[in-house]
Image 1 (cartoon, rainbow, N blue to C red):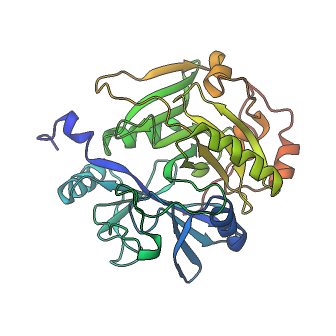
Image 2 (tube, helix red, strand yellow):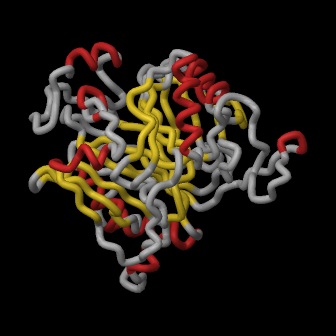
Length: 351
């Protein structure tokens, strides 16, 4: 890797391409994404359903897989070239990460792929080969940059935007993304000398992967996956829709100080937290911009500029999989708040 400059390394990962979401209620989870968020079903196979937003570039960006518990099956990052794929593999292995090739054809529409685990146990896939989505005539859009026609159902999301991981050691996860995958940390939250949050990107977006400290002491859990609207009003309209159809809203709509992205957090029926992202927030056009640091003392502004309260009893402690249903978790952590020691609800994702 000695002949690869830092600037080149930062362009070896193009973007977050796909996420597999585990659900104990796969049909209800599918209904949430199709009937309410207007995503298209690409294929159903075995225990999984493949979906995409109307501007997602590939065959699918979201895979829903039936499972005993909710959570993250895997996240998939696409490289910028086949050579970049090999270099990222070499870099990860040189640092002692176990990487294994996924059998060809295992994931619909994607080719040569290797998998490894983050320092906290999250499953990560890296690939270059991806089939571009080609809409059938009935879904073809007159807007040439749009992969398919905007659906007339629900409040349709455009595309997958980002995901947020929970970890016992944020620094360990951040180190792998920076050292081996070429991400830069755009913003970070510190509690004294302890890093409790990192927002990371391989392109101009404020983040495509974030990592927050799991205040329960757990490992390898999912905080949320996010889908992009591109319009703040859509978050407001979506909130009304969720109220009408009994989808629990955790917080929002409002605007984060961190990333300046517009948010709305809800829980889909399978138990996973989903974020709807309005406008994209701050774009990192400046290639040498240093990591912007937030202190825990400023967290209210960092979380919500407009004053919305992100509940400590869930937002900083609830991730999937969870040993407790959401209602019981909320009751158990009702008194949890800023400055509290890690809660005694350790959770780890089994390997």
